[in-house]
Length: 284
Image (tube, rainbow, N blue to C red):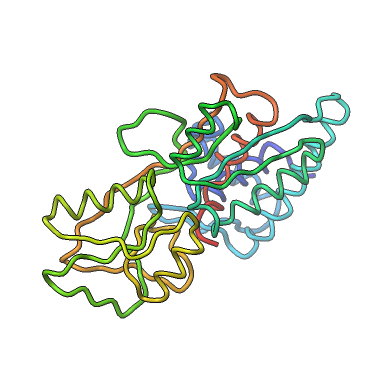
């Protein structure tokens, strides 16, 4: 039988592509993580990771093990909850930033709902600024949203570099205002894009505004102008636009923010799942 402790270490290492980060999330030292992986590879008789100096990636056998390991751990967790009488119940009002519409977050939420069928989840998708307002008004229990660097609200999930994106070929005439396809206020990426252009002394004009990512993508695909998105979350059909005329929009952070000082129950469980699903929060 495969040891669930080794499987848990393996799953987190596969999700983070880092033994060091896996150890941080699990409260283990990096040598202990390496030992767990080595023991699991010995038990399986297969190599599960390819390692280099910067990251670790799954082999073909590792991909197969990941699917099996997640199933084993899920079954074990269900059994523990069943016999402990601790099945999660109640309502969970979760808010997610528009950025995640075309990511794999829906897969994460689907897995959560399947594992916790007695939790009634309500999902709100909106701009980060709107989500914060709903959270402060007591209308949400947990949000996954953006914040500017330097803002200390929430628990950091990951940092992302913002880039200009559009449909190639993009022609921006020197001296002409940069055409922008943007979320409406209070969008953080909108504000950062405009601030970057103004610091560089460049003019700009809004040519398309939409509160949904799908609408912005349509405007950019039509060639109306440029969007700003995290580099790891570029919608299909669009590409990063690199031009020495355009200033870098900067970086943002994705964070988890709870409506209560201490998360409990379903909110705490979903927050834990999201922390361990960083690789699934990229573009689908």
